[in-house]
Length: 159
Image (tube, rainbow, N blue to C red; front, side, top):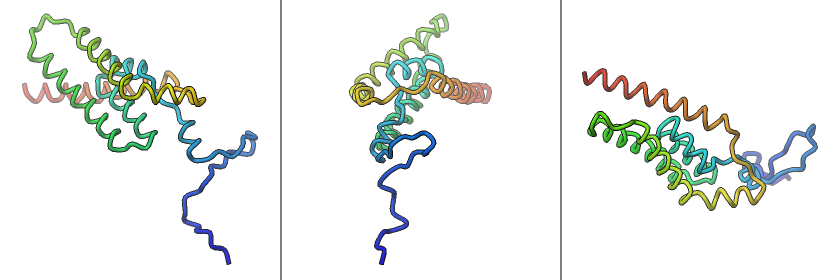
């Protein structure tokens, strides 16, 4: 009688035979998933606000199986965006907006480097890759549109 559980998670991940790649373990599959570098996090923050940078850091944490940390990064990025917008609305009007972009990008780069830098370096050393350049840019632009639209709608409603 067969004692294998047909509903149990697989212990190996089968690759397409047309590629002639060896069978890879599930742990190896997680290591093969691309990460976002601190530089990509900073660029996404510059293009889409701290929310975009937080989403990329959350994706890195989720890739490592740290779901609570991932949620913390995503919520922290949104909170950072709200704080920057509130600060920009309270400060004098002649303050350049580029200053907020540069400072928030630098802050997110530093946070990403401090919190996930060692993991990124270990990932690259183990043969992993960083995500392709278009993906963080697309996430940043989409996040910027959503957050910008929400901010615009809020400002219109407040009069």
